[in-house]
Length: 385
Image 1 (cartoon, one colour):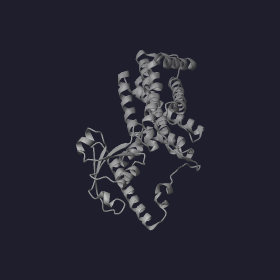
Image 2: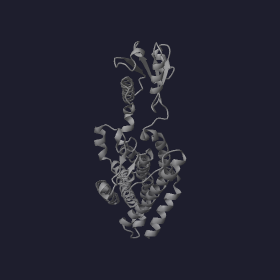
Image 3: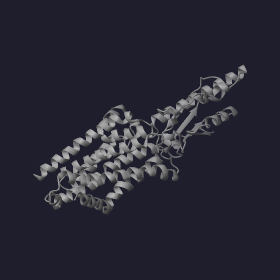
Image 4: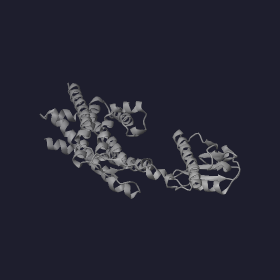
């Protein structure tokens, strides 16, 4: 009999086109969009540079050379204006991000003295971090010009000016191999977890329909235990979750590179990746069974499940990476099971971690699953009685 319960559940899943779209198409689209959208953020580069209109009443070969030096970067584009621009016109109609005006004596003091002044203007949508970065960049270039001029006067080598080249940076894994974090390494586990918890929608719909039509009572009337009925629902959706994991990893490894994105690279153990995906699946299905037994209608289950999943995803760093959250929100995110799942996946995929690194998150997810699975069984018994 258990075989036919499994067969019934698999057929219901396969015939539910909307559920398949939610489980497979939705995360694929999110992974593609977010991996490509955040690619430059994780790579610390800009495809579109911030534009700066540099205004000076006087020009000189030294100033033009200084502007060429300023343009030797990957973040800003400087344009020298011969006449004083109207700031509002330049920012809001000519679409410059910044307007930089130089003092009258800038040409005479350039490279000879630090006693020069600049006035920086920007649009209101420019972030404080971008303003601070531009100010630091200009400060470094001015200091560099003064030191360069001083070394020329003293007849010394200018090699000491290449400060960027003497400072290196590498990401380090636990096995001492260097790597860089990419957007796809964050997007794939994030939206995979989100879609795994969305298994709630098809489970709820089938479960509630069977309750309303008396299917569960008819099955139990032929001496099929409640545990077999629940496991008959648990196993097919567990298999669907694992298919989601397999498909989304393939999307990250092969489809994203075809769209000029970074390929998903897994630095950790494949066994641990399978283990964490199984634990997340058990937690997601247990939570889904609880919502299904709690709800009286598909509409109620969709509202309860959809809302709770979106809130847990927002808190858990799925929609917004936790690294950009303030400290208070990072602490709050620790209450979300999606945060535990995401940390577990990232420990394996990005950091190449071992079981000890994911042990705490695995225990949290198992306790979460045990709690809601128990509540689902109690609720089902209570409703039946």
